[in-house]
Image (cartoon, rainbow, N blue to C red):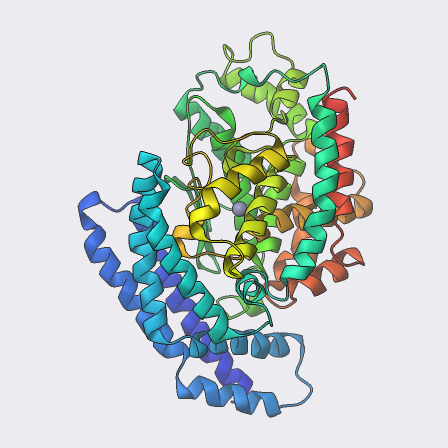
Length: 497
Ligand code: ZN
């Protein structure tokens, strides 16, 4: 066995250990009795320790060095070496004490964040957030993959991306989004949003979500859908990808579009080529590309007229009272209502980007030390006013709304908006190659879009990095104009502009 083969063997075991840790996590969020969390926390910590020790072993360090001497590696071997080295170096450069400190601060930070949000009192969370930011700056210093610390943190989630690259893309998008939002706001013919906020039977919503994801070719032989407080998707092996949803009986989109979204993530992980199953390459290539898949299915497909031409008659049959006197067009318009709102996770396709741009700009200033944590609530509100024209009445609806900072996930937010941008560009290419896709949706056929995604994106896992993948699939670098073009084409007719 040469060094690459040995490396593959080592990393397939590490990947399996990671899957086992994910199983503990899945169970924790889906099934675990309330009184059992303490024992589970110990198990999680133990698994993390075992995985860390496996990753930083001398054996892996030596194998990487030996593999680097090998010449003429094929595509998979080359990517295996690159990604193994990336994972190894990330782990080796971070001292165990720092990792442990982050984990402890994250647990405590989460508790304080929940309390602060409940009491609408930022000062309860502030000391923990300050500590976490200090720790994240240490992470950036230790990893030192980019000259500026924020880019180093971004690279953890979006390999190859930098602050400057994203800032350039976001600044361009910001102006365009602004002008679309203004135009839609000035329309005198707005959709009827109240269709969605009636009472929707929970069990029927659940059944309908299952029917839809089956229609999207999610394979229930290799996965399942469950309920959890925070929806998520997780792979427990390369032939077991599960996801969760939540149901709100006063708001239709939560369950159905949440399910389609997570299903999009799951289809990605389920589409890996067999050669890379359970290997270091067996996951999405970046958080942004992952999000492109979920947002494409959720919004570009799931919120399209063609999609509902097929599903609406079935929906109406299940909810005759809710949809009495409502046409498919009324429904389509209501699920595409655009409204500047306070909460990111409830934001529509058009205003969503502004929520991310706000966090991206604040994160950069915090990590660079340009602003103090104590200034955050005020800066948040100022930016909301600038970007969306609304000011949060409370900090719970403002700076305290997201969980991410309590866990120390700085650099993660920008991938959410990058996902929309990647998604629009991929989708444009899919439509160019298969112009009849929307007509197929009207007949309930979604398999040709999935086939396109499998062939061009899913099967490769981490083989290609995001910047190479987008170029390979679409012929050019990431270009935010496609997303803007998509929004204008879709939303101006909805708002009768
Ligand atoms: Zn997602």
